[in-house]
Amino acid sequence: MYRSVRTIRIIISLIAMGVPTWALIAGYNSVLVRMQILTALLAGVGLVLVFWAVVTLIYGRIYCSTVCPMGTLMDCVSFGSRKARRRSRSYRYRAPSRRTRIVFLLLTFVSLLSSSAIVPTLLDPYSAYSRMVSEFIGRPAGIEDRSVEFAIASMSTAVATALVVIGVAWKNGRLLCNTICPVGTILGYGARRAYFHIEIDPDRCISCGECERVCKAQCIKVSDRAVDNSRCVVCFDCTAVCPNGSINYKSGRYQLGMPMLRKLDTSSPTLDIQKNK
Ligand code: SF4
Ligand code: SF4
Ligand code: SF4
Image (cartoon, rainbow, N blue to C red; front, top):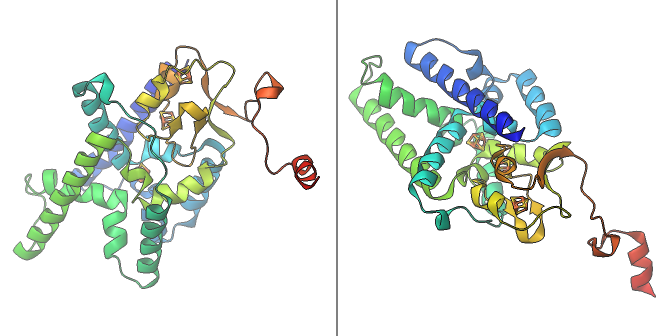
């Protein structure tokens, strides 16, 4: 079942990347452009922000696995990388970069509050993506007509962005999504406690490590049977490869079948009483 869901997810993401790309080249205004989060924030379209807030609280970061064209571009690079690399060089769990995420998020907000568009424009994934499309496809096609200085500055920024995005995605999948992207950081706060989320069944998991190896968000820690849902982009890659159906997209939490093996709940009042004895 998850293989089909993953295939549908990939098709949607390719359409959601293709339509705005075509719209950018042809000079049309696509609804998928208006659905981009930071673009909506900059334009003051509150309804789009509320929509994505609710969707994220229910389903997790599906915006990142379907609608964001930069995320899909990273997935295409990751796919090429995984095909080219040996199995032993697949992904491994990476500890969260909380400080980096907060620093870039604060930088974005401070810039927005001080009415400076430079940082948000550089960090907004849709702005960065559209700049690359305009420079690499729009300009050679003769659509753009600007001053030489502006053209050089814009092309240099697009080349630098492409090098960073492709270089990081090739080696570390969605690392940029979980470090410098302000949209990913904001969505991560909602996705952490999303109603539907990726979860490992500790009773069924055989510790084969397949899910951790394919997770381009590097947020699965098989040794702890844990998934960091604030970084999970709900791509369904892990659920599609599990040989045992042990990792699922579900509501609620798994409980170990043998109560003696359950982790201690340190917030439990019972434990406090025992500690104070
Ligand atoms: S984290 Fe940012 S760049 Fe990555 S998919 Fe989400 S919005 Fe796009
Ligand atoms: S945990 Fe699974 S669904 Fe989430 S990003 Fe990793 S592979 Fe994709
Ligand atoms: S792929 Fe399935 S069985 Fe293997 S480690 Fe992951 S959850 Fe466990």
